Amino acid sequence: MTTFANVSDVSTRLGRPITSEAEVAQVNAWLSDAEALIRGRILDLDERVAAAPAYEDAVVSVEANAVVRKIQNPEGLRQTTRSVDDGSITKTRDSVLSDGQLRITDEEWALLLGVDDVGAFSTRPGFEPDAPAFCPGGWFW
Image 1 (cartoon, helix red, strand yellow):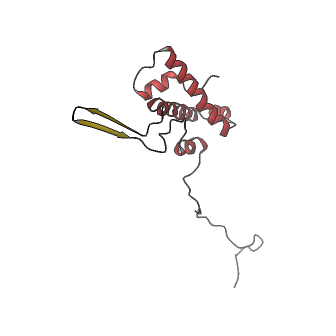
Image 2 (image 1 turned 90 degrees about the vertical axis):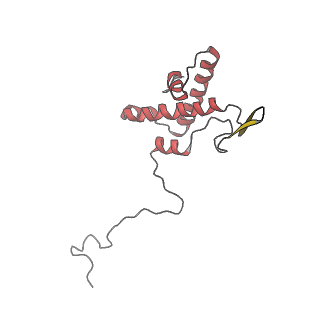
Image 3 (image 1 turned 135 degrees about the horizontal axis):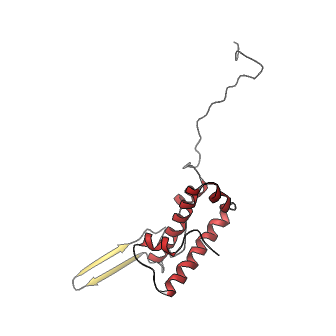
């Protein structure tokens, strides 16, 4: 399956070349997995891309960034410590994104789906007059 993002897109975002045959195959597989996740939720993906070229850029970005997160932490390590002599460096990753799964974040889904940032129990202000259509002057008291 041809994906919107490619190895070059991932390499650019990762900040290093992806050259070995095994790594190229792995990145291509992960890109296919990322696109399958997107297509599972956005059934008209091809139509959306065809209608708006900027939308394709968003899809490429989301696919490539999902794969970069997977490359940076394939085992799902939450914390690593390196010790040399008397010094040590500990790095802790975000627990939501560090489980080693290929994920698309909520922010990325919002970008692709065009969802506003609206929480539970929120309302949008709006106004519709209560006056019936047949009453030209509005309500009379």
